[in-house]
Length: 445
Ligand SMILES: [Zn+2]
Ligand SMILES: [Zn+2]
Picture 1 (cartoon, protein in one colour):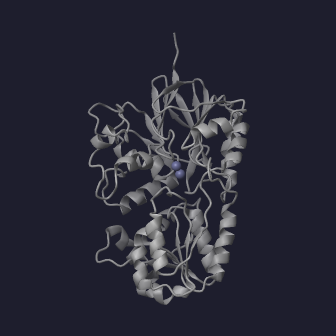
Picture 2 (cartoon, rainbow, N blue to C red):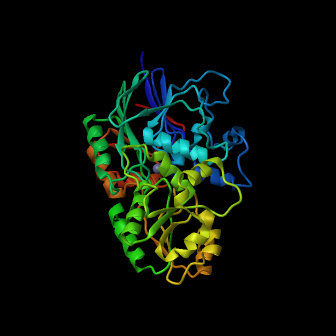
Picture 3 (cartoon, rainbow, N blue to C red):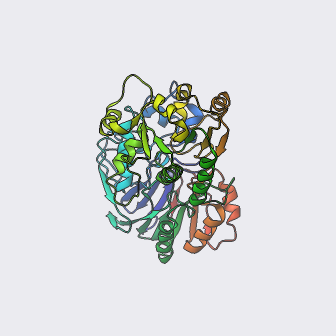
C-alpha cells in the first residue's frame, strides 16, 4: 500500500518571523526550502558579541538548530537530503547554510549567490554564517529543476532584497507553492504577479505562505517612499543621515536618485560599495555606478582594513572620503550611516538643520537589529530629529488575502509570522483549509 508518500515538515518559521526551514519529502526525495537563522530563538538565549553560540552543539541543545540526520557537515553519516533551495539572501532564510553538508547542492538565484558570497567575504569567519565551499547551483525564473521525484520551478517575486523567488514544486500529489518573502507594493509588482499567475494554473494542493504583516500594516509603496525622501532632502539644510538595509537595492536606488536630483552626494559605506561592486555583473539589476559623480565611498575611521575593504579602497581610490571630508561637504551629502558607525558623528559635527532618516523596518531589519534607545540618545545629543520613512518588504494583509484567494490552494500554511492565530481567523471564510502549522510536525499531502 502506497501512502504518506508526500509531506511537508516545518523546522522553522512557525510562529516566528524568519528562520524558515521547510522540508518537502516525496517518496525517497528530500529537499529543504530555505535554511535560515531564527533571530527570535537566538535572542532568547544569546546576547552577542559576548554571549554567542560556540558550537552547533549549543544551538541544537537549545532548539535553535533542529536535530536532523543527513544534512549537516558535522554529521558522521552520508547526506540524506538531495538539495536545498534558497528563496533569497536574507539571513533568516539562508544563514544556516553554514551548517549544511557541502556535498548537498544548494540552489538559488544568481543574485542571491553573489549576495551570500559577498556577505560571507565581508564577515570574519563565523559559526553561524559561512558559505565557503558550498556547492551553489543557480537558477533563473521559469527554470525547471528536477530533483529525484520533484520538479521545482523558481519564479521571481518582489521583496526588499533583489533576487527573491517563490517556488512551485511539482510533487506526486500535485503542486505545492512556497512563496518565500514577497510583496506587491514594491518597485516590481509584476514579478510577484508572475508567481501568482503560474501558481493558480497548477491548482495547488498546498501553499506555504509568508504572513509577516498582520499587525501594523501600512498602505504605501516604494514610489511613495522615494517622494517622501525627496521632500525631506529638499528641506534639509545640513547633512541628511540615513540608515537602510544595505542589500536593499530599491531603497539604495531611491536615495541615489533623490541625492542626485537635489545636487547632493550619496555617501555609501564600504559594505554597500563592496556589494554594489559584486552585483555589477548582474545584468538583471539596475544599480548606481560607484564611479558616478553623485556617489562617494565612506572610509570609516580605523587603523586596519580587511582585505575586502582594501580592494574597494584601491579600486575606487578617487571616490573615497574620510569622515573629515564628509563633514566638510555635509550640506551636500546624504550619508548612509549604519547604527554601528554612529561614533563617526563625533567628527562629522552635524550642522544645524541636519536630520536623520530611519529607512529600515522595526523592530529589526533582516540583517541587523537597531537599539532604538541608543540611537535616540545619539540623535538627541546632536540635535537631530528622526524621521521614519519606510515601507515593508512583506505583503500587506488584504493583498495577501486576495493573492491566496486567487491561487486557491486546497490548504494554506502561514509561516514567517508571529500572528498565526490572527491569520487563521482573518482567512476563515476562504475555500482553502487554513492550517495553523506546528513546528516539526509532518503534514501528509
Ligand atoms: Zn524573511
Ligand atoms: Zn526576506
